Image (cartoon, rainbow, N blue to C red; front, side):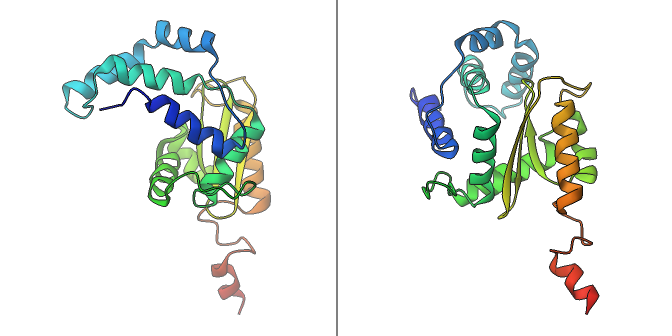
Length: 194
């Protein structure tokens, strides 16, 4: 069961990862509550299947508040860098997330963080990422770097058009794809060259 301070605890963690105090855009929060019919339907389906133990409305309220946190591209990059750095903010040095939580979060980002483009994303870009309908994308390359992108124009799958293009280009040019062994930084590539 979510405690009464669940949102405050999560906001505090995300603020620590961003390296600054974050807050909620109250207009976006109200809009989410008024228009989140698909999320409401999914929550009821999960509750009916005994996957969601929480009361639907309290779970949705927490979700809608989390979706309404104001962030910049720099905040996204810092949060991603904290995830990539096994839960420790690389600038402040503070441990923000437990390593098991980081592992699970990056796994979910990698497998389904880009909505209906997730399968193609894994092949095309190969970076654990999560997009948001506001036009942000957060990407974490395990133990290497965090990426934050923001551009509000969305494609048909609900992802930032320019953000997808930028991360794809970065992945190609910097060899960030998780399964790219031609990357000169890859130990597999070094073994092929011997």
